[in-house]
Amino acid sequence: MAHFIGAHTVDNGGIHMAAKRAANAGMRALQIFTAIPKYYNDKVSIRGERVVRFRETLATTDIPLDHVVVHAAYVLNTATPDEAKWIRARDGLAKELERSTTLGVGAVCFHPGAATDDNREASAERIAAAIVHALEQVEGGTRLLVENTAGAGRTMGRTPEEVGAILRHIPAKLRSRTGYGLDTCHLFASGFDLRKGPADVSALLDAFEEATGEPPGFFHFNDSEGALASNKDRHMLIGEGLIGVDPFGWLLADARSQDVPIILETPQLNYDIADDDDSPDEYDVRMMTLLQGFAGGK
Ligand SMILES: [Zn+2]
Ligand SMILES: [Zn+2]
Image: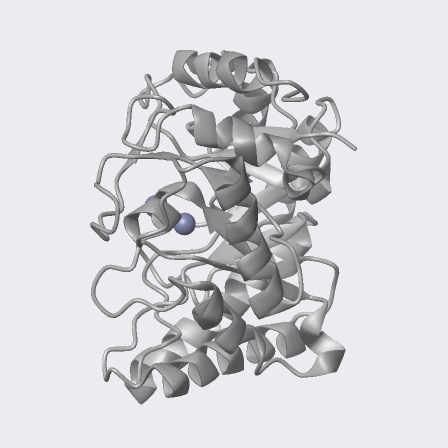
């Protein structure tokens, strides 16, 4: 059993350079985009040479392919009651899964979107239908995971019950290919106070496990600029936001953080790094030192 800590590193020069930068920060997990995340990319495939270069680079690191997470485009609102928008989001999600399966990564994570008609049960069904469509279109071992949200507007997936309501609509034969993951900033912003103590943090993981039938498939480790229950999705370096350092140690002490990707989506110091520069980001190095300082935090 071990911790697999990584980051969504800058991909200037390509996703294989993102992998090198993470590895050079001492990381054992990674998050990437496979296409520009502000577009639907519902017709975008991934080129073979890009796949080969990424996989060959990853093989030279301590990052296993199944501990790489692809973050889906932000614009995919699979909860929308608007039929045309839903079809595009559904097709975009299937393409995300196709590109990620071609790469061979462990999982795709996505934000389930917003119930703009305020019918949250119908929205949960629409999200599930988009997941089912993607899993039926694309066979393979890459899992499609719902990410909990910060709760702004009418976004779905802010509580254990809502994540559970989405996954409940997945047929049993597809269920093992989907699941969920937890972002600490989103938890805090949607009203879960992670600062109360290790027992409270573990009880929150229990609540998600009870509502969904399984532990999280990944974690996003982000501190929060926004206050508790502010619904504000603004990430900060761990220790520089309102969550503080200790809750991350408590999460690392819970067995459910072992063997799944733990991804930092915290700020990078150098977003303009040269395409051929594989040196690690100084902020990532700082975050790794901090997290490895916890007992068992390696
Ligand atoms: Zn996210
Ligand atoms: Zn976020």
